[in-house]
Each structure stands twice: as C-alpha cells, then as structure tokens.
Image (cartoon, rainbow, N blue to C red; front, top):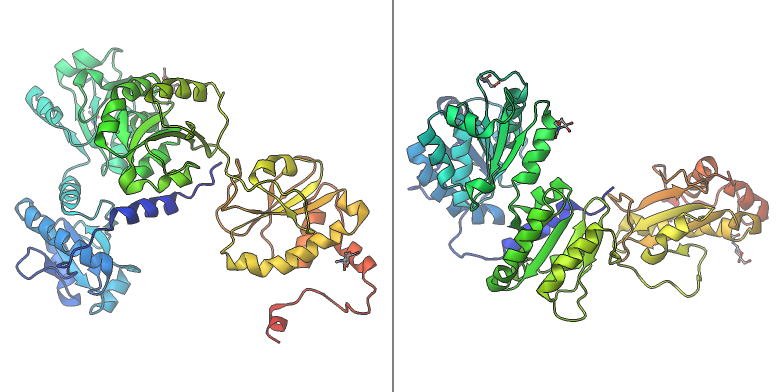
Length: 515
Ligand SMILES: *[C@@H]1O[C@H](CO)[C@@H](O)[C@H](O)[C@H]1NC(C)=O
Ligand SMILES: *[C@@H]1O[C@H](CO)[C@@H](O)[C@H](O)[C@H]1NC(C)=O
Ligand SMILES: *[C@@H]1O[C@H](CO)[C@@H](O)[C@H](O)[C@H]1NC(C)=O
C-alpha cells in the first residue's frame, strides 16, 4: 500500500511553478478580447447556440483568477477561428448561476458541449495549453485516417504520444470497442488514431485478424515505436500498455507529468539536475537503462532549480545532481549516497542492484530513544516493524505534531497507556505506542489522516483500524475486543483505583473541559 500523499506533492510542485508575478494581471478579460462575458440572462442561450464553450467561473479579487486572466484572453483570441468560445461568469455578481453549477472555488473552468452537463477542464492554466486542450475537445476522440499521406502527416510532428490502432478489415476481436472506450477516457493526454490502411495492415498486423496497437512518442524515431498485438487484449491490458509505453524513455517530472508517473505505480528513478548540460551528459546512459527496464522502472529528470525541495520527500539532501529511485508500491526510497559528488558511472550498477533487491532503503527516522520514560511507547521509524510484530497486542497512534485532534487525544492516550503499563500481567501483553509520522517513515501502512490509530494483534492478523470515539473507554474496549489476548483494561483500571477520588468516570467529556 502507499502512504505518500499525491495531492500534497502535486500542489507543492504546482505552487512552486507559479511563483512568478505580473503587475498587469487582471481577472476580468479586457473588453477587446474575444472572451464573452455571460450573465444569468445570456447564459442559457449562449450555451445552446455554441457547440463548444470553455466557461470560467471567477471572482475579480482572486489571485489565481488574476494570473489566469491574460492567458484566458489570449487563448480566446487564438480560438476564434476554430469557432470555440471562451466565456467568463463573475460569481460575485451571478451568485445564483454559480450556485447552480456547484462552483466552490475560483477559478473553476468547465467545458460545455451545447447542453447543461459540462465536464471539468483538466488542462494547465496557460494559453497554449488551453488552446490545444480545447482544439482536442472539438475533435472526435478517435481520428479515422485511411490515407497513407494523412497518417504520415499525423506522425510527422507529434506534440504528444499517439496511439494508432491498425484494424484489419476482417478483425473479429473486441479490441476496437476497448480502444474507443479508452480514447474517450484518455483523450486529454494522448492522440488516438485508427486505420485500416492496407500498407499499415501489411506492415504491423503479424497475426491474422488481430488488431494491433502502436504507441509513437514525440521526439523519437518511428522505428522505436512500441507495438502490441494480442487477440485477447482486454481493457486493463490495453490501458496498461498505453500507460507504460507513452512515457518517454528519459522523461521529465513537472507539475504536469507528476501525476501520470504516480499513477503508473512503477518505481520512478529521478535524476535531479541544476543545468541542462548535466541532464544531457547522462541522457545516453539513462536512455539505455530505460530501454532495458521498460515497463519495470520509469526514468525522469527533475529540474532542481524549480522543484529541488522535492528531494526531501525522497529522504535526500538538496545537493545536486542526485539520483534516487522511489518504489511507489512500497513507498521506499533508494538513493545514491550523497557523501560525495554523484558519479554518473555509478548509476547503471545502482539500478541493477535495485532490481535485484540488493539495496537498503533510506529510512527517515528519529533516533531510537535510549530509555522509554513515558507510559506511551515512543516509537520511531527504525523500530516500527520490530515493535508492531512482537507477540503483543500493539496499538499505534500515527500523529503529526501540528495536528489538533492529536493534541486533544494526548491526555486520554497517556491515561490509557498507564493502565496497561502499571499492571505487570497486562504490560506483558499490551503496548500503547505513538509515532510522529512526519519524522519517521513507515512502510506498508496507509496513513491518510492524523491521527490514524491501528491495532496490531499479537497473532499477526492485523492491523485493524480504530474508527471509534476517541475516549478511554472506547479505546480500551477496542483493545479487548480486537486484541489477541482480550485484556480488559477497564477492569484493571477499576480494580486499581480505590473508587474514592475517581467517581463514575475519569474520562472528561467535552462539556467539562470548559469549566
Ligand atoms: C469501432 O468502434 C467505433 C465505436 O464503437 C465504431 O463507431 C466503429 O464503427 C468501429 N469500427 C469498426 C471497423 O468496427
Ligand atoms: C493478452 O491480453 C490478455 C488480457 O489483457 C492477457 O491476459 C495476456 O497475458 C496477453 N497475452 C500476451 C501474450 O501478452
Ligand atoms: C501508575 O503507577 C504510578 C506509580 O506507581 C502511579 O503514580 C499512577 O497513578 C498509576 N497510574 C494509574 C493510571 O494507575
């Protein structure tokens, strides 16, 4: 399982890319641009009359809207000749209209196709990206090209990967349906073309009647394209082929590509560089590795001047160039030692050792405490697996120092820990632990929020996630119920307290906190 937070990383990358400012930015498009300003009165008819509209719902004061303004206007001007309209709706004036479309943040961009069910715009927010995104929206998801000249044309100057279906006229497979299905889903990222051109059938279809799929990548030779021919190919198989083969051999991690690398789930080998020359110097070597490990490891450069902070997420220092492999499935990170400058010649051997499982991951961890002072066991990354796998029922709270819910839980959690810790029999069976998840790596556990509380029963059947109320009684019952030993913490507490100074309940409910 994974525990890295894709959305956080993406927004860090996106934020870092947007640091440049511009004094002349305004959210509202200038009157002489092609952007159409819509109101509640004009909206419906405009959407009906125009087959393809990109609508921006915005507020004049919003910073992202100001940055988008000039880009949006420029894109509108460029799209005039394609008869694609760009429109703006000022949500500070048209509250009802914006509410009707469920607008919650600014700017929100939606694509309308002549009716009231828009789809979300998923491109980048700058003019060229808007233009190419919208031109593509105007095309059918799959282009049918039968002329050899048209096919050569399409291949001549690729700006994005192209997936070509060569469909023999007597094809009996369901590949064509699958291809159209995927084209609909992935049209924003790739170009989909289908042909039954006899020359192409002759050249690519090796097995009679079997549709063949070819991925052409921008900037690479046509002969290097990847070919798939499989009579029984299904949706999953074709999608995975597309996901793997559309990646450039030695690509680039940016705000725009990061998500696709994460989604491919393959280990990602990063080369962080400060100068283009450094990337050029390793390009041949890394391309060779990328060919060898195609479909097993992705290789990409990352511009350290823009995104260097990302090194920390990978447990590396911001010292460049650097080479690090992130195993996304296990969330483990393997980097070439930064004790001395990176020698490019070390990279192939390092990758080979990674494949063979011979490398030790770089674990981020606090040092192991020399003594455990408190009832709650202070757990760290180095010890995590050992402690949760001992033959005891181990409850672990994964927390972040800044998390308010975690701070509120702390006194209850300490009290809970003391119950078992103070009792000789119970302390041999139950451990209550906490770990600062921002300072310690833990592998194989999915943490999506703080605090996350998991019980690792002694019999190794866990972990079991705790979803109940964060009260002492509820936590203790959970340990009794789900733990292997069924230790009854509440009974121990009641037996040891003399009853005089602890009437009824010693869990404070929230109303008492205020007194
Ligand atoms: C391929 O599938 C599409 C979409 O379902 C369909 O329109 C087209 O006619 C099919 N082509 C062939 C040759 O079956
Ligand atoms: C063909 O595709 C099917 C379904 O995706 C897959 O199970 C099978 O392994 C593939 N065959 C080959 C030879 O790749
Ligand atoms: C645990 O034991 C210590 C010392 O024996 C005592 O001060 C403390 O009150 C006990 N805590 C609980 C919850 O019983």
